[in-house]
Image (cartoon, rainbow over all chains, first blue to last red; front, side):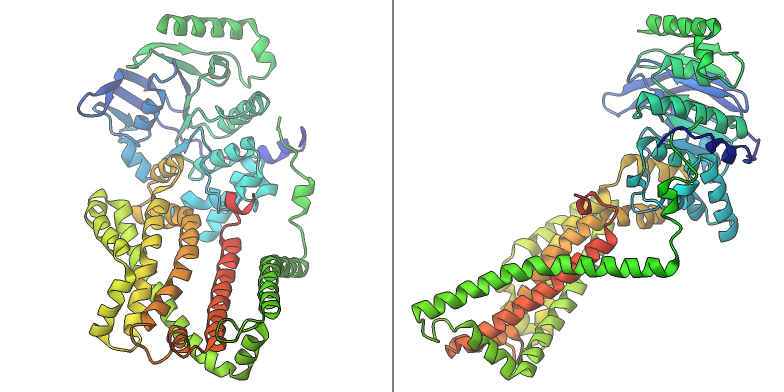
Amino acid sequence: MGISDKAGSHWVDYEGDMTACQVTIRNLSHSYGDDEPLRVLDDISLDVQPGQFVSIVGPSGCGKSTLLRAIGGLLTPTSGEVMVDEQTPRQLQQKMGIGFVFQDPALLPWRSVRKNIDLPLEVAGGRTRRAGRKAVRELLDLVGLREFSSYPPYQLSGGMQQRVAIARALAFDPPLLLMDEPFGALDEITREAMRQELQRIWAAARKTVFFVTHSIREAALLSDRVIVLSPRPARVLGSFEVTLPRPRTEQTEDDPEFLACIGTLREALRLAA
Amino acid sequence: MAIEALGGSPAGAALEVSPRRGVRRRLGRWVVAILWELIPPLVALGLLVGGWWAYVEIDDTPDYIAPSPDQVWDELVDRPDFYVDHAWFTLKNALAGLAIGATVALVLATAMAHSRLIEKGLFPVAIIVKVTPIVAIAPLFTIWWGFGVEPKIAVAALISFFPILVNAIVGFRSVEPAALDFMRSINASRFEVFSKLRLPSSLPYLIAAMRVSVPLSIIGAVVAEWFGAAEGLGRLVQVANANLDLPTLFAAIVVLALMGIALNLLLSIADRLLLGWHASSRT
């Protein structure tokens, strides 16, 4: 494994659907448990524009994942609402409109890379076999894994597995992409590469992205906007626009403006804790 | 910028094998897999038989205590049809019972894995089936159904049922939470979650269950024959025992052992074919 220039050539020809959705969160609160409810989300309101890349940062265990699950329709909040282009998350989910990437790639180990990416298409069953297959090829190219199409997941590195998970989440070209610490389990070198890769994918297909992370640097590098949450129960402490030019590379990280961004975010988080 | 090398990597080249060479290679892999399954048990068996033979020769043990392996061998080759017929009767009942026991167990496990209420209701019943000694129930089946195949199939089904039930419930529930979340995020139905996620993830558990239940089903079929049967290896053992006909008794035991080995071999092959992805086959 090494750095290859050739890899880039697969990437440019992907023409993703440019549709993205607007996300409106109104007074969202959530508690776990009935007897002694544990309040996790406290009156969160947000407006996210179509195609925005939004990172959510906050102290460990503050409810970032819970917020993401509520946006993705995996969890029904205790009160408040999430609307995605005038639909509920569940409705969007039923149209295969949400792509989810978890910290654990959660690939099905008995399926090859191709068949894992094919899984959402299989479940939807709507597309014809041929169209589906072409889409899978496109997705494999998008994440640069064409040669590994017939490999079982366990023969892939952690970073490659996570790329398969991203390709799988994009199988339906969903307007909303939700990522829950997707690079959390990766080593720093792979993580660095994955950030660049994600930027490239996002540039090719401008989805609305919610990206939960522990890393301030990661949030500042990838996002248009960073939401800082308080410790549990999570409230929105601040919302920061990151206006650095794209694409953001390793050089960006030396940019004084970038460092100022990080300083601001760090300060906000310090106040949170 | 990318991390892993892509085009022209040796891994990529491995994909471009001509189909015929692929088939031959797969065949070769099969032969190796089968030999790998066969040789170790044959060596162990050889040592066992050799030890037995040596003991009988040195001790000069009389036939009615323990025959020598060559006597048993003569007995087997003298009338192979006789043993094959009896073995077939027992095997047929054991497998029919296993099929019924496994089917009922899988259906119940599916229901129980999906509903705690059903599990609460049915699990105690399954426990009762499990803890009641099978030798106590077998005569009852003979009273109900006579000397035919039914009591044998019923006992085999009853005895093979519980391991499959317990393993299937655990197997169906032991899915990765993130995988379950993903299935939900793509709006998979309960049936799709079951067929595409729960069932395949439970395969290691189900194969483990079969390794327990297959020999149990043979025990069940043999024991049931003791409570009234006209044929079968269990019946043969019983009659030979009564007559102190030790060569026949041993021959029947050898046939039973061979039957168990053959079935276990089939399970090992199924294991290799179905569970290549599972950690158990890579360590």
